[in-house]
Amino acid sequence: MNIKLRFLGAVFATFLVTGCISSKSQANLDVNFNVDKQLDYCVNQSLEALKLIPDDGESIPRNIPPNSKQWKYVDYKDWTSGFWPGELWYLYEYTQKDELKEDAAKFTEYLKPLSVTPALDHDLGFQVFNSYGNGYRLTKDPEYKSVILKAADTLATLFNPKVGTILSWPREVPNMEWPQHNTIMDNMINLELLFWASKNGGSKTLYDMAVSHAEVTMKNHFRPDYTSYHVVVYDKDTGKRIKGVTHQGYSDDSMWARGQAWAIYGYTMVYRETKDPKFLDFVHKVAKVYLDRLPNDLIPYWDFDAPDIPNEPKDASAAAIVASSLIELSTYTEDTVLAKDYLKKAESMLKELSNNYQSRNKNSACLLHSTGHKPADSEIDYSINYADYYYVEALLRLKKIKEGIAFNTLALKNN
Image (cartoon, rainbow, N blue to C red; front, side):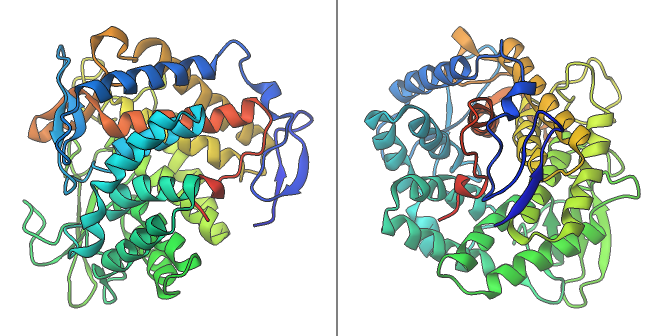
């Protein structure tokens, strides 16, 4: 992809590259923020976690409750199952330690059944692409590629052409009016699996499905102020929008922090894959309302409209997702002032997470204080594996910028 990066004024060089950032770009970043130190910490935490995991061929760490050191384990069917092997692949990329490579491969293999069974839900992207996708990027193992392509075809079976989106939950979920068609904001992240497959040996129709999903979601999932609903329910036969709801947020009219984070991350990725300027323009607006409403420490409460702020739980996972998104989004932003602001805010988010949210000696996760599903009283103030995954991803992205080395956004998961 040839993208002209007019990056950060006089300090950020302007040239044509294949998704790369100027070696001068690190000049605007905080030289006192030691990214390697934070990554080393994540390596040490993960090595400690590996000592605790049962070697039973199925246990994948998902979360740790407050004031506990004990992981809750899930199997390959859980929607979060790809984050742990994905984190290990990232840490192997950073360290080049064979130990981490072997463990990443072991936990990735746990997820192989997902490629040969009917779609349980939309989360195949989270599950397969974070694990096998990162594994293939780093090893070029042809078996990994085969699994990714099979998983993409499986995910495509949930696409409803009358609606134009992928069905998220193919089962009865409260307030979803089953058997009508529901689509959740998280599903935006899973489009990356379809984009990649369409460009690496899979059907070209996968690309069209991903674009359709992004366009229909852009039209129906957002309020006039660019805050997002968590879920939109459609008539499965006509494609007509029935209603928007916020399943994991405070109310149907509130801005659920992680939902908005998924939107920022998802539309940044969709622009990368399509180069369609309408997606870039849109993600700037979706990011702006999130950034404008952040508290001073840049770590959101679980919902921006929760009634008891500042006594509401925070969500470190949303902060990590957005930090990673903003680093990539800054590379597509021709407004040099805005690009610089995105990058500095992302670094500030990572500094706050590193200084005040690391688990350290409390448990073997990387971060504390994430919120999973507060209305269901689930995973409130927990350490959660997807917070750690996006934290490590964001640190790696920032490291490449700070060191002035080629930072290829496509290379994060592309062939």
